[in-house]
Image 1 (spheres, helix red, strand yellow):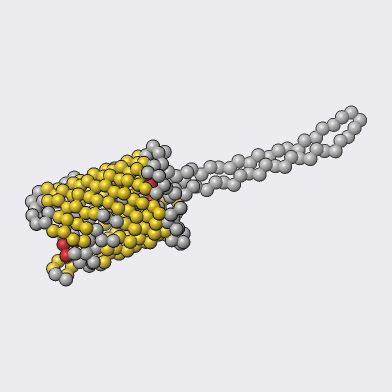
Image 2: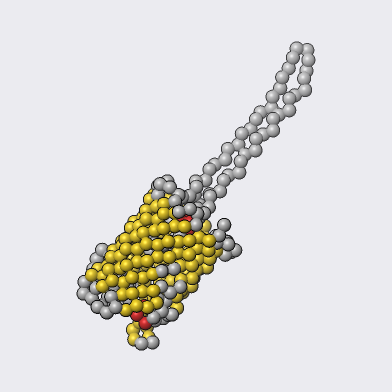
Length: 291
């Protein structure tokens, strides 16, 4: 999610003074004053959300501020393999992690759909597989200036997944998103997530809990088509009555033209959680449809 923002330039006004010439014994009519050069209008900040790398939100936990433009469709896809070490450890693979984003004619608003992903896990010693829950949402890019972009998004997931991979209840997520350009190379992005989540407690029952998820990501880019990032995310709760955890991840994103982006990432939990630690690798591909 690049953060190239164009600075506002100040306009200047040039005024020309009238001129007059004279010869001996002859009085000439005054030379008309040259027309004053009109001052150029102050230029507004350029739209920072015109490239696919600015709009794609994966693979960070931080949500991209930028929205998909009208008459455009963005499909993000990915795969992760998470290794859990410690008691009851194992591997969990998740794909295709599709995220469908549809531009609308409402200014800087998009509609989002998260279809189910397939999961295969050996955590706990037994191999299980199944689909995750489906979600719907919307994003609003509220505004931008010469350095910053800000907005918000909201989504609702429904308990449509298989038993081992569903929250068991409807979940509600709301994010405040922002990005700030530090230098032509470096920028910061952050999301403040407010989440009402669920966890299955018994057959046909679930417990609800609240989790605050703030993130901070540092991006480095020397071109408009690639960038690397380092990110920190904190989850204030990981389940009903369970403590929080931190996540650190790193990644790289590369555009291949105006309609295709590739990404790769690595992340880990710096502290143990219930005697376990996690690390993961992932990769993704995103497609932008539209002129």
